[in-house]
Image (cartoon, rainbow, N blue to C red; front, side, top):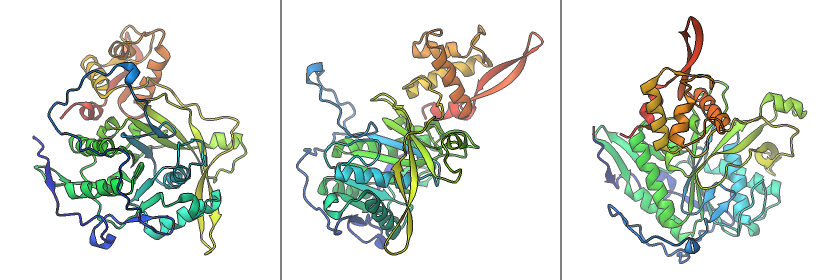
Length: 427
């Protein structure tokens, strides 16, 4: 059925209305003063929505450098995604990173540029809980209100903040007023970085609707480009049954991952590594790794931990900090970098047409030959990466490994998961 995307202005009040009235309630940390200074820095011209935007080729010497704002995952004008299971420490990580950005200090592993203006849209925790978490992190890192300088802004749970909904079977309703209100806040407060946590709470689209999620994700990417800021959305994982988190572990449609230029994943530190480093089994340690990097190299995983900080009111609050170097780290299986959605669809389509394909690289009908051909790789020189990609896809359910009898002997083969094939095909 053809999807009809319409626009609605019925579910979002004015930008500065109280949360109970359905608005996006932005609160400025440090004296709770709103920085309503009009932005003149970026020349925020509206993006043309023509069918085809043709421009002249730019000589290499005239190309501007990419403007990485923090580490290699927040890029001005682009959309990023953070994939994490619940309860691992993602909100504490985002708060520590936000404080690093607004102060210009290296609080964790990554170093930002000049002090930035950050907006945290948290749709899980109440405002008073977010205030506690921010206060605890400030106390832990020795940060004062003067250090923040009015650059940290917070929109907490309770706001009727829905960027889109799927109200009928006819299609998706995009909340134009919500986008306009968010755009107004970005421009008036000169926001450089926005985090939306969690993604599922900013819309009412079916998680498995690739068309709808793709439309919303691209609207967010367009907003980032228009307002010249970086937007990172946080998405939960599906049930993992003990498997490591990859970008493919995110719940629902894969369109969100395809729209993002960078994807990070959070994994709990394994019990084996904890034991090897004398860390108590109950201690909260996790790894942060770049899992998709279209515009930079994939960096090594960074280990963080959650420590308890006591506030003056008697509350004990968890704060994220970088962990000292560990003796060993879990070996992360590295596959092929930057497989585009079109290449993934081509690979899975060909495997499905020729299945069952052989699992072992020594077989003449090895499934890896299909991957090598689509990706223009050398099956011998790039055999390890191809094999690792197959293992990753088996683990995340993209491929299904089984056995058949070949010349009276059991032989391992792989088939495509029909749901994975359906998810990567257009429409």
